[in-house]
Length: 485
Image (tube, rainbow, N blue to C red; front, side, top):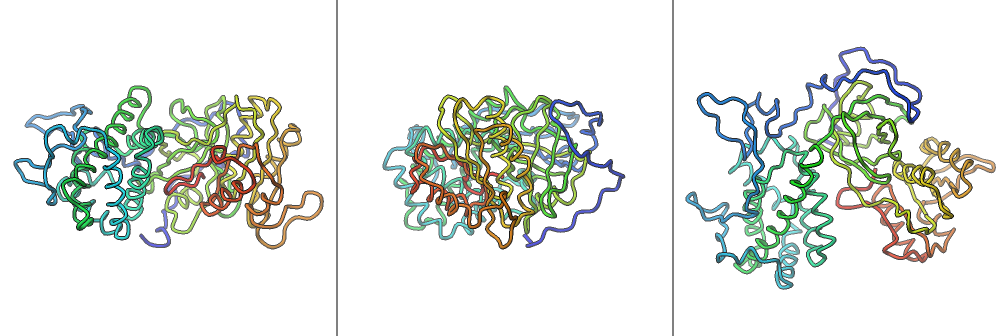
């Protein structure tokens, strides 16, 4: 993948000017243009694009002599079917274990073997995951269209997801929560229940190749048990979600405001109700980079008019972020995955709150503050530290200060890590955000919410632990490749 994303052609049509404001609760006269998005090349089963380009998925029936559009079922598949079939094994795995042995839950011994395997494979993760995908695309070329053209990031995400699942294997509640969100989220890629078996066999084959002497029949059985558990939870979650919600939402851009040269505030109107909580995030796909999804946090609490707002910063080599900041305009149509994230408020707690937002990480913090204002603070105080490098990057400060003027329970402190800055009584604090927060401690008894660049979040966690915040009271969504916003 190049360090700078390719340029995106300009819009071939005249675009209406973006409105200066979209107050909550007001109707919009802008007609929906959800049908005017031919570039959204979704490659899922039954989709017009996949039919037009003859892309078949694993569960697609072979076309007959007079085949018309046929609904694609989502049958519950065995999580890891036996590799030894009439066609042999995939990539040289040793075949199925004794009947029923792989259906048992992983034991403590299994978990140890899985972690031993990961310790061996992690140093060669790039080669192992490349081999894994090569096996999938070689033996099941029909699924290639479900993946983005550039696979670099996808490979990294796979191994991080495996690491996260393996580390949580002895924490059933945590593992179930993680995999449930993963299973629901995979629906937007076009993943079906029937995909999990072949993927599992290719995964085992790749592990067997790169685990060396660590791989034997006992280790393979451990991985089969773990994968059956993992895929079973994901399948159940996907099938449950399919009964109540779509795999993705289409959302029309109704406002695009340039907050700074590299930051845009984008408001969209989904094609149907989109339920979420303040503090959560979603994944987003643009029409210019099909099948490339990126995480973005909601910048407001749920609104009566159903509109959703995101703060997006264009980053180097950020294909999606650059497209959103520099190309998106009212009338364009994006796709949203389901909401996710655990950085939500517990209104029954009553504890005082400490919120840290770095850069566009202020978006979910703004949403949380809005929710408290709507719900009522109930005697709790809220301290917000808003960090950036320069004055201009504190684009959300005035809105937060207006809230603080109306609500005495809210305190907002801007922090600048770069040179210069505002002067006078409203001057920003100087220094790195985590260290500035430490100066105002101790923070024992507080619930902390963190969002921003990964390095900031990690450093802030350490600072808050030393400042007296209990580990279970520090909330963030820095999981794998995700730093909220």
